[in-house]
Image: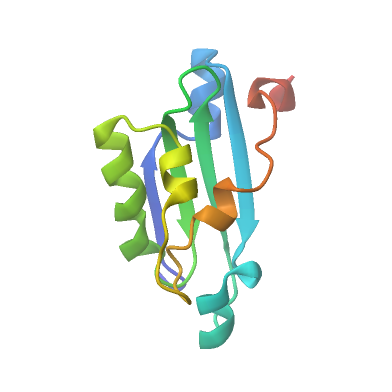
Length: 116
């Protein structure tokens, strides 16, 4: 698939179905330095976070390098680390794995309200 699609963990629909209070952040690939540099700025990144524990519930990445950088999120999910660990991580610039830009954005309040 071009651009590649990478998913890990829950989707927004699964969060809603389970009634889990969660937060969501999204970022367009046109705002990712490496995607711009490569001229492949189609797609987006999305992360879902448990509103209480701050642990990462899931992610979707549609865009250049997404099939590789999803492992940065998977490692934190397996470690049950809260998302601020990702926010504070320093990745080499430019790279698609600069997730600090994604989680540094204000996380929307409970995604359950967006399905009501």
